[in-house]
Image (cartoon, rainbow, N blue to C red):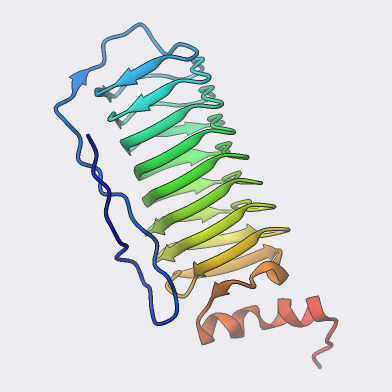
Length: 229
């Protein structure tokens, strides 16, 4: 059974509440030897290693105390899935559907994903470390105690999402969309790159560095209707 860390170890700082990171300790796992994912499947204490799960239907499935390592998830349908107390390492795929899913106490390490759908999902105590995710769709999702560390996020969409105690540490955000998002105790100061395409006016509730403020100044001025000549 996984155990959870009581507190975070991210960038933090005076007056900024740090995210609580997951600390997953998996029990001895059984190798997965099933025929494939099933809708509403129940997967407990299993190790999925180098499995090709592309195109499979796992809507509503539950993964508890599992490890997925090097698995292919192209167009895998996991709508409404629950991923709990699990570690996902080196997974890869395009068009993975995790919309309206729950990820709680999860470590996602060195993922290579494109167009992954997490809109309407709930992420709590999640660590995303390393890897690259293109076009991450988190519209109207709820993120609480989430850390993005050392990863690259290309055009992530946080539109209408609620972010509470979320940290971006040594990661790249390029073309991020925060339109209609609500941010509380979001720490962007340690991001390696902060490029906001839309929703710069929604950064209230976030903490940024002086250098980031200078980078965002043209967008902020345009948002306020200020001409700089």
